[in-house]
Image 1: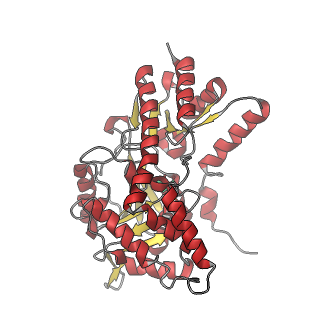
Image 2: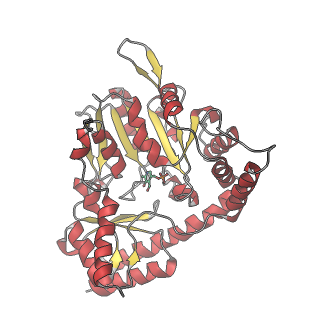
Image 3: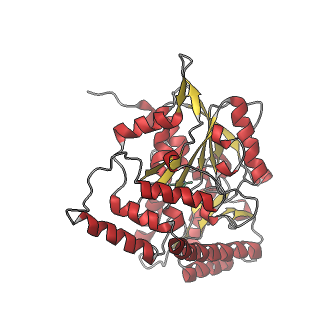
Length: 401
Ligand code: PLP
């Protein structure tokens, strides 16, 4: 009989959204006529841009013709045409990334979770709390020591480094899921300085960069000085271009990023990751890569921006409802998430039940994202406009003075 990785037994029994689905399904079974509005899961709802769909169809057609058929992709790191397109996208906001420093993947979740493979289990991992659960779970699975940097009301849910604490790996997510807060340049610089001082590596999740609207909020950690020596960036087309069901993202590891092995030799992080991927990942399908490349054309950017603007308007509607109700919140400006303080001193799950029962609105309890999420709640702007308005009216009805 095989033994198991007992670290898995230390995890929460279910991933957060499975627990939410169970509660909602139980409610639906009891009240089949309830008109439930879902603002919980961070999944997009608008269709993919036309020019992106056309590019995918063209790629699929090529697969059906002998001359243009493609089997395994040689490098598994992504076709040159897509890596060049991503490099060009970075350039459009002033960041120089070489195509060879980019690897294409099937979404940021895979790389956020799998990157831990190349680091030793003796590392101390610093994660801002609350956080996207994948960072914590995947490190606990390997038995690593996880410590937390508190994001809370006092610091606007933007945790900053503590010079008295050492870490080897640091997870940052900006704009943040779940809190919607986004680091400005000085704040990112403070993290970079901390990482360099500790010889640590920052794993920077930029999955929501396309939602940034304010000046002074970098869209990439590599827009900030020093990052090339200490950071890995992960990004995704899921929220940028509605790819949650398509699956495509990219990871950037700068050439300069090295670590010292126990024998004193300098090891390239990019090579180590390439070695891991070479053995465990065979690349993203050709039609999906064709679609992804179309996202970065002028027309693709124009069309996908329309969808983002739609979600941003939803975020504005949610934020203004919170303003009207006098509820504190972060996010909504550079992010599709509104992170609100549960009214009347309610706990996260208490407010979840209250909203489900009284307003038939589903959100995500902040406690599911970490200790500092207790008493907070996440609503997403990824829904339909009219349903978003309807949900906010219901909130005003049940919470209005
Ligand atoms: N990172 C963050 C912060 C996210 O919120 C998500 C998805 O919700 C992901 C990564 C994963 O995105 P995907 O795997 O769809 O690219």
